[in-house]
Amino acid sequence: MSNLQVQLIKKPDAKYPRVNDVFQVKTTSTPTTNQLKDGEVLLENLYFSIDATMRVWISGAKTYVDPVLPGNTMFGQAVSKVLASKSEKFQKGDYVIGLVNWTLYQIISDAKLHLVKRGGDIDDLTGYSFLGPLGISGLTAYIGFEAIGKPKEGETVVISAAAGAVGEIAVQLAKTYYKCKVIGIAGGPEKCDYVKKQLGAHDCIDYKNENLSKRLRELTPNGIHVYFDNVGGEMLDEILMHITDHTRIILCGAIATYNQTGEPYKVKNYPRLIIKRAVMQGFLYFDHPELFKPAQATITQMIKQGQLKIRYDVQNGLEQAPNGLAKLLLGQNNGKVVVKAKSDQPKL
Image 1 (cartoon, one colour):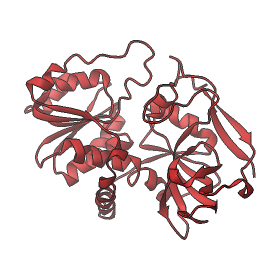
Image 2 (cartoon, rainbow, N blue to C red):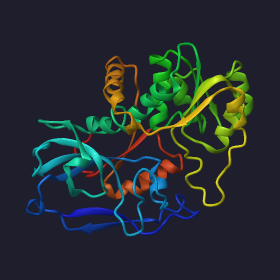
Image 3 (tube, one colour):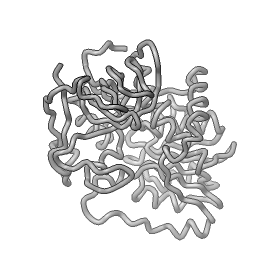
Image 4 (cartoon, rainbow, N blue to C red):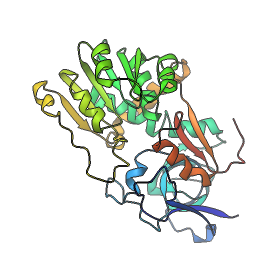
């Protein structure tokens, strides 16, 4: 069996992701069961999550994970199958999730993995769901609201990047589960139509073609109670001009800043937080493991009742992972970007 590996070959510059030349795909040797040590498993990596925060990881900046440096293998969250085990936690045939290398096969410590299914097989859609609504995207949306936003019925919730992987779940949670008035922000009429007609938002602002300040005044005359921020930058600054007393701002992402190579944008309107006694807080979903089960229970119930719609932007073949990341960073994706590691896997 040949083993593919995606490696970072240089730090991204101002041309990236328009010029997608920072990765290379290599063929390497496949690890064998003879190489396993106690506490390790041999994985076949099946489905990879593509997330905007990866742009920060490849910049060389130190964050909550070690940076990916030129010469390193790229990594990300994936659903994998255990092919062989010297672990007391996992057995052959288990399906697991964790941060793994962008490779087809890998030996890894069991401490870095969590069990998602024991026994039987999973299909593509199930694999994607462990990365999307039941995984990082769904957990992030739910935990952002529960830990920081705390929306109350009837309040106005505004969500940026509303057609994205986290945004689309946040819109539906805010509308159906929390029973709020929901205003999405997205780029382009197609995405805004999706946010309104498919996800059920009360309205959506097309920031590429509409005046954001004017539309916010029209749609939130009594101010914004909760803002779920996936964008940062100038959009966050504008939002601050429309908050009300005791607004809660959930800092989830800052995709507007990820490709900046010069002086970072400085938020100017932060004194509004003082005037309005508002809260603006960042978070990482894995800081709240106590909310994992309630999040998955809530989202599973919504899926069963047909109250949650999810789109997947599937890249076929691990070699397409760099293209999937560039597509996401350019805003050209439609929904959650996932990679099916082997393009010959059974289709949905």
